[in-house]
Image (cartoon, rainbow, N blue to C red; front, side, top):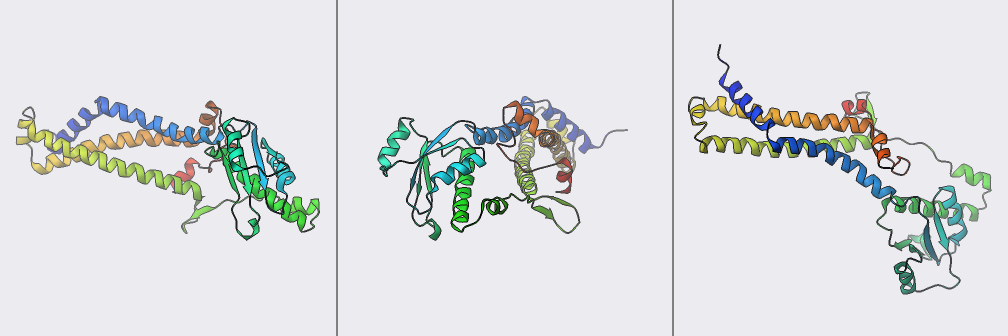
Length: 288
């Protein structure tokens, strides 16, 4: 019994493309890109996290944040050293000290921070996302501690006031099944991007395959003996199957990275404490 024409065309399209160097290279580059997207931001965020950071504090407010900043930095286990000059130095002088590596940066605290004026940090490490996040937490904690002390709260009351609470936003569409809100966004965005790229890429492949059939004499007999609908159906199924195989491979690698991301980051010397990530389980992926 002869096979349907569309099945013959689909089998030929699938086997021809899955054996090409292009398919093998792109399929392998997908997992490499996923590992890079996981590791590179983590490395950037954790770069220099254990190094000593020297900051000059120029405080024009009434909070006198120097001592409180040191307390907050110690409380958050950061290696930030605060230097308070006796006289207010010029910004040009501070920039020269940054240029000569005497300090890493300087922080300008304006007089009216209670009225919404911005505390500014300028330094050669301002692109270090991990350090910026820690410094932001240190500054906020210092201002809060200073306000609590000025309000006359005792040390016990301040400790109770700043006790960290656990908070977790969850996605619930009314079905009773929940998943991490951040995980839902990440997976949804990544899935949309991959599907969009796959549609564009393999739609072009189908178009090129049709053009190739019209310009190639080798398959002229196949085209002439195949009905147009069967030919188009076979090409769509054949090329689409190649895309599904590729996306399936990428999906499997993505699930493994989700499951073993701490181990993968550990291979590059990065811990999740330095680079916090939303908790994503394989079960949550199925819910999303």
